[in-house]
Image (cartoon, rainbow, N blue to C red; front, side):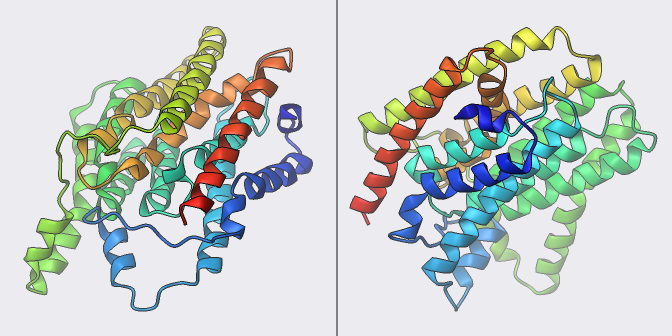
Length: 328
């Protein structure tokens, strides 16, 4: 089954669409609405203040479209950067499967929308190496990070990712670090200015990150724990195959992967440090998770291991769909 996604073909795209509809079957039975996490940025505020709620059928199809577009955009980006030896759609497959594995990721949330910004920021970061116009690229990267933060405040961690990537891919130049910082500050400055001119500075209190150590899930759940353990197992296998290939890569690709692994380790603690964001905020981990798990589906010469991971994942997804339908 996984072999269908090892080729860069139209059939692979059609298979991905089919798999996405299958693993999110609950959407066609019970539908979904946009799950708003309170005080998590402008996206949440706009959705919450919308006087005309969208029909559940429309939201369900919109969720599927966004997931497919995000998975394909990430996959195409990594293929264009030649971060894999062979071009395929295994990263997109991993992304779609992960969105359906955890109940909190299987419904439309503001975090899902914000995940587009994570991909957007990584696109800019991947263009920094040997860029003939680094200052323009750095300012654009900063703008992307600043806008991301305003829209969904747990993306605040992208600031650390951006500065680390700059430190890795380019020699230290103070002017470049300042330009990146100015790019980050610019959208925040514009927003604060608009709020100030409208005499509504009080809204800033609700948009500042609320950092507090806590457990994202209030009760123990053996199924959720099992699914998270399985994600870790897939990640470890993917990291193992990535490590094997890493020694054969050119310096630019190693630096791109270094930025990706930093993105992974910085996004993992998000559900534990940002209050009110919940397990939904862990969606921001999907970009690096899918990128590394894609190695586990792509590189094994024998199909036993990728197919085993795929069908175990499907079995757990069946339970997730059943749980969501039952608790509707």
